[in-house]
Each structure stands twice: as structure tokens, then as C-alpha cells.
Image (tube, each protein chain N blue to C red):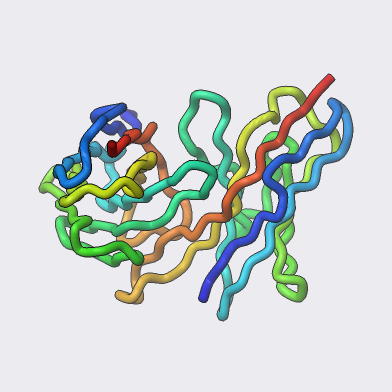
Length: 113
Length: 114
């Protein structure tokens, strides 16, 4: 069965330090993976998707099929990066043409001075 | 462009009661998905609607049901509420059939069952 694992509930780093939020997945087939972020008092929003291969707010994530990982990285953490981060996998529904998101349990990133 | 809205924001019910949660999709989006997020967990997929038809369902019992209307707004109904139904209920909309990952979430409805 498809599954997304985020092993860390909380990651605390100093401002300016590198950040790596871990995500591992279990999925048979070619996965579509995403990172969603929820800032304090805001709604859940898409941060980035692996097929876009883009950098958003300095964050990047590379899909490693061999290690079944999709870790989120940023070289220098900023205070405004403090938020809840969810890794998610797009999973086709039974109908075959639709899909749903399977989320991990999330990692809270805390950036301190 | 209007984002996804949900009502009410908070709700308190007692065990055995029924509840209806509402969602207005983002302008131009015809697919709505519902998720349940228990405390400390990631969102879990309940079901999805596309053009007023249920498009797929997660591992939730039949007492969780839904509707989508011609304007693509949607309702989530939960009958015979149980204590474990206490959670944040999220609605997400997306353009086109299905949701290939990019979903736009509402602020959620927080349900407390006593």
C-alpha cells in the first residue's frame, strides 16, 4: 500500500543553518510527490512538486527512486521558514483517472536565532 | 480570484448527532476533495467529487457521505457521530478531473464531538 513517512515530528535549526526535512515513500509505480506547507494561522498550500524541478523560497527537493525518498532542503534557514511541512504522494483512485493525496504526518520546522 | 472557503469554522456536536460541513471551491475548479486531519496527523482522504459525481473514496465508513452541486460547491455529511470524528475537516479544490497533486485547500472546519 502507498505510504508516506516523515520520521521527524520536530526539526529545530538555527537561522542560517542548512535544513533537510526527510520524506520516504512506499509506492508501486511512478510516484508524483509534493511538499505542502502550513504557516501559522494559514491554510495548507503547495510548496513544490517534483515534476516541476523548481526552487520555491529557496527550497528544493529531489526524487530519489532508489532510496524512495523526496527530502526537502534549503541551504540557509530563515525565521519565516518556521512552519509545518507535509510530504504528499499523488495516488490514483480506483476510477483510474482521478487521484488523491496521501500525506505524511508532517514535520514542524522551528528556526531560531 | 476567490479561494476555497469552508463553513462553519468551528462546530461542537454530541455523539450520535449528524453534521453537515460546507465548501465552496475556487473559481474555475470542478473537482472537490475532502480530508480529515486528526490532531498530530496528516490529512487523510475521505472522498472526491467531480461534476457532481463521487470520483473516489478513501477508507471511511458509509456514514461519511457527500454531495457536489452544479456550481461545484460541496457538502460533507457525517451521521451517527463518534468521538473519534473530532478532527479538522479540510476541503480542497482543483481544476480538471481528478487531482494530480496540486490541490487548493480551504481553512478547514474544526469539529469537536463530545
